[in-house]
Structure formats: C-alpha cells, structure tokens
Image 1 (tube, helix red, strand yellow):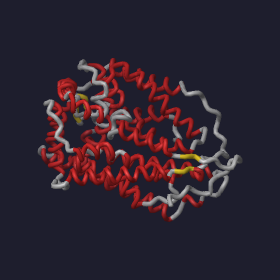
Image 2: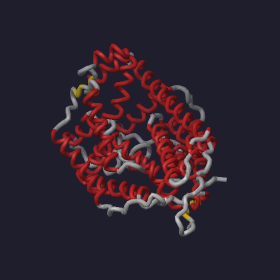
Image 3: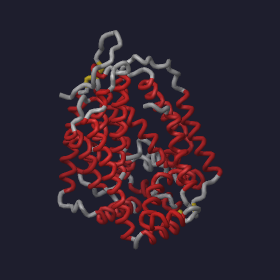
Image 4: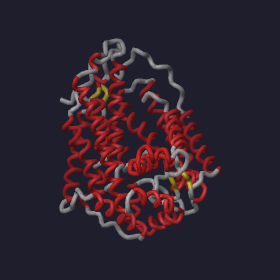
Length: 443
C-alpha cells in the first residue's frame, strides 16, 4: 500500500465525478440532490475520522525489511488448496447438465433469480451450490497469498486453486464482478510483491526484478485483462442484441434507468466511435459512476425499512431468505419502487439502506481498519500484514459499487483472508535488520 486510504478514497470518487461531468451523461430522472451530496460528504468525513483515530506512526526506516524469508505460509497454502478443491468439486456437481456456453441463457437465469427474490420465493439452490458459495471466495485469498509470498509464482497453481473456483462461480451464478475482483486482487498483490522486494533490497541492485519470467507474468496480466474486457464486451453486446440493439438500449436507459447519453460532446463521440462502441463506452463508464448517482438517490428518497445487511451482503440475504423470504422481498420491493433495484448503490448507499445514518459509524470503523493496515505495512514493515494490502485497496476502489463486505461475496472473502492471516507465521530473524535475498519458495 503506497497511497494513504483517505487519499485513495477521495481520488477514486473524484475520478467518478469527473467521468460523470465530462462524458455526455444526462440524469433525466436521477438528479443529484443537495441533501444527497451532503450525506455523501458526511460519509467521507466519517471515513476520514476513522483514519485519524489511528495513532501516527514514526517514519519508516529505509533500511528495514519485511523479513519475508522468515514467513511461514505453508499451512495457510495447504488449507486454501483444500478449500479450493472442495469448491471445484461442488461447482462441477452443481453445474452438471447445464449449457455453460449459453450467455443469453445465463442472463435469463440471473433475471429469473432476481424475480424470485421479489416474489418471496424460496431458494432452489442445491446443497452443492451452497457449499461452493461458501468456499469459492477462498480463491481470492489464495491468489493474494501465492502472489505475494511465494518465491516463484506457479501459474498452474494460481490458475487451479485461485482462479478456477472463481470462474466456476461465474458459470454458476453469472455476472462479471467475481472475475473483475479476482483480477484486481491479483494485480494489486503483484504490485505488493514487487514493492516488498524493492523495500527489502533497497540497498542492493534490483536487476533481479526484471527477469524473463517477470516479463511473461506482466504479459499474461495484460492479455488476461484484454480477454476479460472482450468477455465483458460480448456480454453487453449480447444483452443489447436481445433488446433490439444499442439504439434500443439507449432508449431503454432513458425511459427505465432515467439516464441518457446525449449531453455535450455526444455527437462527436457517436461520430468518432460509432453507435456500438459508443454504447460500450456508455455502459462501461456507467458501471463505475452509477454508485455516485444511485447513492444520492437513496439518501434523498429511500424510505423503506432498514435491511441490516440483507441489501449489501450476499451471505446475509441468502441466510434470511432461507427463513424469512418475505422480509427480503419487502426490502427489495421498496428499492424497486424507487427505481434503484438492480443498480450499484456504492458502499455508502448500501450502508445507508442497511443501517441508515448509523452506517456512518460503520464507515468510521472502515476508515480505522484501512488506515491501521496502511500503518502496519507502510511504516512498521509487518510482512504478515501484506496479505491485507490488495483487499484493503480493492475495497476502496470498488467503494463506487458496494462495501468491501458486499462486493463479490465480500463477507466470506474477507473471512478467508482473516483465516489466512491467522495461519501465517513470522519466524524471528537476526536482530540486525537484513534485507532478504529473495522471496520465499513454496517448495
């Protein structure tokens, strides 16, 4: 973590605000309100307040290292591998007999599941799916653990025990968030790995950082990002074709979403990029800026019941649905009547629906926890705490979508992260601070 959580949070939201201002968005039925902006500012102040509660740390010793040579991660790796295998087996049994290549069919299945929530219908998920739902997020923890601590990254291990359970979850549940989150965790973990090596070898030559294998890893990341972007684009195009094409989707966005794309510079964008590519620009940018708009909408107009985690946390909604599906339906129908059901509420909008203004207290805790991790990593050089770095950063980046505990089955993901942290063991090294020659090996 090189950026203070407060600066990162403000930067991410500032980028979203600039995108909303520069691109030709028209908030036809979702205007930003003064009250909504004030409540949003209160949530930012709460995050900053939590950050300020962390005692200031002395400036880091430039010679201090993370002592990764003394890090024993073998038990944590074995546990996560076992959980990953359970997830893979459970998903394979749950997915048997289904056409996994039918993208439009998968979208229809997701729509049906959303409608069953509104109708207070009981879940029809199998026991295998329930097991997989609780175990596949361990893949995120494995991606972070393997990428940060292992001397030589094993692509097949990372793919099998890290990414495969997550890809299977997408085939089972649909959506893009799990893959986006996995790629983000990997990218942030790789940056953490490189930063920790530089810090641990600040006085030594760093030519070992640029190796053919490192170049291949960076190339792999780039190609994976391109492939994921293409996959997301195909999904959006398939959806638009099912509705009559991009032109029909723009009209749908105006009439149903209350959002247009015909503001300033729209004619130039349509002329340069064409209708289909402009549609992709609109849909990808709306994916990230909608949290700003929907949050203001919720702050100003939501008068439904407090949902106490049902709205923002997947596991809570799944558990409550088992016992009281009417409670879930009642809360979600209130969001549907407001026109916000199915949209990303942002972390602050999600906390507001679940806890009201008491969500400000939750945000204080979030700011405190994020800054504490930053202090332990940045200033105290705690190698064990590096496992938190990608999750803390990703939680702030995706605050435009949901809370860290709500995005991509986040509560379960962070539970596996905490278990991984508890299983890491830091052995004492020579009292004299030494820079490790390289990262430890998994062999």
